[in-house]
Image 1: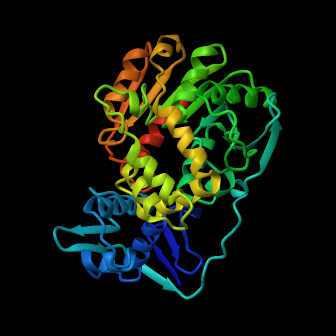
Image 2: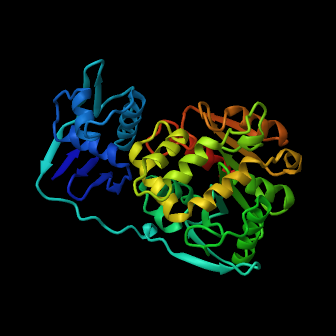
Image 3: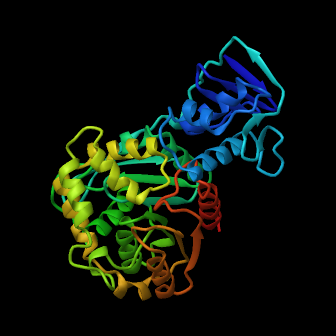
Length: 391
């Protein structure tokens, strides 16, 4: 069925939302919330019904619900102040106040060219093959992720694909699977930070790119920082999201067993399908969820690496320090960090900013290590990132 309201069309069969004729990508809970409201125009829908219909009655935090409401409003061009389409009745619920026209016809989903990912391979000087993918056009940006990636599986995650496409609107985004994981050659070699940094340069060389920006996440920040410090002439800009100077095991006040709980969850839960143990580990990083995204990301990690390799990789990162390299970074640097990140505290981001000359720190109002699509901090993250990379 097709629902038309304001300048939007929502099709609950094709699972498509369009605004002004352009498809709007939203995560499943946001779409389901909009569908619930559009199919009940004018009716006040309380919190219990929203949870029952959108989350199938599962326990969900108020902050997670608020995040989906905010995302739903943004998707249809509304906001919490205007409330021209979705109205909040304090302590009562939500109401679709825009006029809704219903049609039995459904939209035909048209293929989107940039959603077709093409994976390519290069042979590195080490002899290993590395997989990479290119999206968009503009100045080159190489993304350095947490290393437990899988290009093919990650592209199928709508919340990940959306953030890639946002960057690709203004840049040539280059993503890759490090040697050992995902679509790259599976091997237990080349796990050190310096070796992973070396792979960044090799990939750029193979693509004929002399100078580029680096956009890194979490543990990948150490590899990006290492490369930027050793190759200042090649890095135009450096972004670190959720980064840190010292690994968890060597920080001030850290006990010898600081990383043991997460290691145990990986060892015991990695091989289990839909593993509750792995979900628990991921929720320590992404406490605001959404849970479905956490589960999907965990499956991607399981497919992309082995438990043994993941534990070894984490042990290397947890005992590594980048402190001696900070002063060698000379390019414009942006540090993004969630205010309430409980795994890698904000104090680590402040150490990065203090050690890199001219670095800028932007604090995101979130508890998630990486704010995903639907999180209130997601749009802030994307806006600040896009502006910085375009300067």
